[in-house]
Image 1 (cartoon, rainbow, N blue to C red):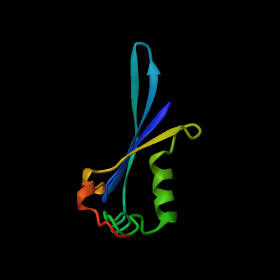
Image 2 (image 1 turned 90 degrees about the vertical axis):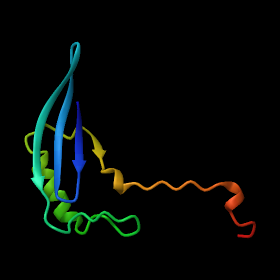
Image 3 (image 1 turned 30 degrees about the vertical axis):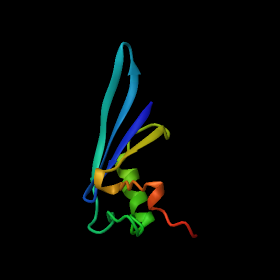
Image 4 (image 1 turned 60 degrees about the vertical axis):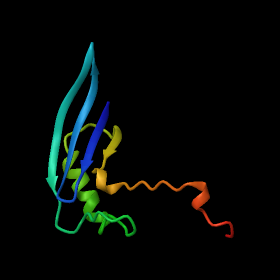
Length: 94
């Protein structure tokens, strides 16, 4: 079984996936509204303001699951930034 965890700046959502012949079974686990400023979408600074508060929210969302299954995390597109640099644009000196 695996767990999908979607994190945004205002809420955290989770669902469990288990194999069930011939498809998969998807089960809603829960949602926790996140306190303001707990998650900051920043490419340079730390994104989690308080790890202890974040851990409490994860426990709230995953309440009712047996054990700790594999966890997959989904982040919004704006949380990842991609930059393409061509080799001829790089400086020759370090």
